[in-house]
Length: 510
Image 1 (cartoon, rainbow, N blue to C red):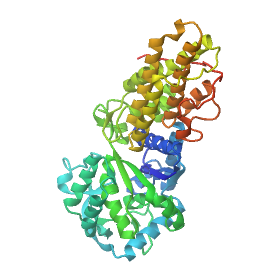
Image 2 (image 1 turned 45 degrees about the horizontal axis):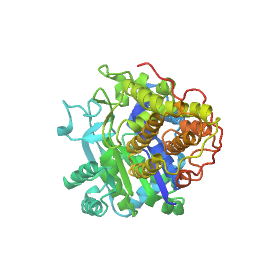
Image 3 (image 1 turned 120 degrees about the vertical axis):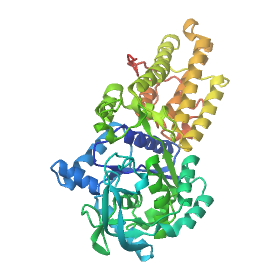
Image 4 (image 1 turned 60 degrees about the vertical axis):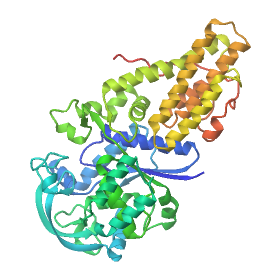
């Protein structure tokens, strides 16, 4: 048994969660569930990023204090993750006392190590990004991400001396080629480093909504440096070094591609400066696109957007399709690491083809035929069945895919097994044959392969897996006892009562 510590980015609380943030969180959740299934001691962290000028502005626009605003909005994220059946072990908020303590300890360590200096900063600042831009990065004088006018700012700041870590970062990239994935994103970060690193501002005096600098109370930490440290806060940095030693070597950050620079350049350098190892693994995923545009909060105010953001919230989609179909679509439709299209039509197509026609019909058909040909009790599988070999190979392929952060591939090979079960039934046509050993062998083998499918889908579709498990007459939950114990062909007791129940996925109209 190993250890596995997976994190999402902490989400900015200037507005409600949407399907873009849900995409990251569902993928992280499914990967965490998979690692629990294979017996790894697992910690799954998500949460909210609650400081900065943008939060203070948003709160003021709503007639609220920053703390009241963040309390209300953080709760909306927790509610959304509950709706999507997210199994996080911790939900961190950057306004928590534990985070203030860790940030102060971590950055004081960097300061004492001589990598933070004070200077005056002049630059073009986007409140939406909480980041500075150079003039040539702007589009018509506006931020390229938020299409808003930048502000010219000058203030005394503390700077992190990132420039001192250029060579060390290059050495780390060379020594740890798998630390940043996919390779294309690793190369992007590497190119940024090779282009030359400049020292970066890490504090502000122009705002008060932030974590105070321990050695200078006139300053608060810049939101990104505060936020990145959350991954250490959650494992007790500065409070419980045994927990840090336990979990930090097994950390896996799942992030969107827009924050590569922060997580793959600044964060490893900050860790080096504080005297700890950089994160073991950062996996960078692409964007969900709607009509070619990134699915984001800014879409809410975009009159040219191809869909209303309110029509594709986690709550609205779960109400239309159910929790597991939404989870399945987010995991199955787009390979993690590339951009993917998101649409109601896409969810509907996946629902009808993969869930209603393939998995749902298979479960119902097997229950019906076992009821009429085998007295409603599970027959023994055939040790020589072709499905046994296919199922065994599927387990190997699925495990490899999930452990490579490729849930889309894991589900694809699992659905190929579903297709093989349906094909075997179509060839044998047990519903046309007289009851007897030959029919029992066909049905028992199909049922056993379905049992293994149920174990393999539990990380993606936990509620559906639990329902199927009960219908095929098994106690507990799929995965109880671990993956290896549950996918052994013929390991389940025979003579179990099989029940049909209501359709798992009633077909939807296009």
